[in-house]
Length: 337
Image (cartoon, rainbow, N blue to C red; front, side, top):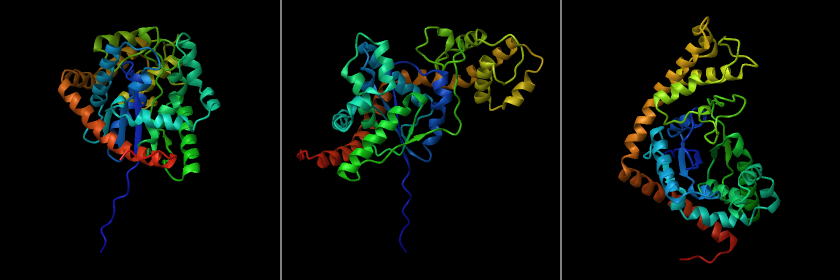
């Protein structure tokens, strides 16, 4: 009797920019959902420091930010024994495949990328070639690992579509080479808005520090920011159209407590927004405390972080090399060995 072969697990890849600490929105909308994915998928997470230098960076701060991002991911539940966790610049195949893929990507396709247009406006004094060809590197990040699923937000959907187009174009010309990645939309994911302008998404680049919570904010900071959160003049905790500020706070409270909107409305019936905002702030502070404390422990242990990113890069490089060798052979490069 033949032994049964275990079905291949889906490969998930996600790249994380090391240019700032994750917000509560990043955490509740995406990162919180990543840890459970490790149980049924082969997850690969990269700190994409090569992407970060498309805008000017302070070198010392970039190195620090990459290590902080690594520590935050582990603190948020990414287990280096279950997932591959590495720093992008430690695996040369990313840059090597990016060059090949840029030769299979049309100038017009890159010019249509809305993120290039947005970043060009914000960095008018540094519209560099890397900023323009960024999507080819992102395609390399994804396609190197024969990725099946990519967790994406609204701002990255266009880049994933281009990665799919490049993969299909290459496959059509050279035969089956790349898996065609699909977007991964989590079943439970919250879109968390700004605490000061609840019509727009929470962002760490917001000029108003009261508009966002980071995963490393202490309890006093969290409570203070929620006390200042924008609501409305109705003084009623209810989820409905036109109550953007209250809707946002209810969404946050729901995600961190597991309570539904109707239960929340009953809990705060007859109570003012002051009580409600304090409760939301306290629930968030309690929810994030283990993450903050674990980050502090991990970030103090530089030897452990070095061990994690070195082992992660070794595993990633092994997988990446298999794809890169296949690509080099198909485009006609002479084998190095």
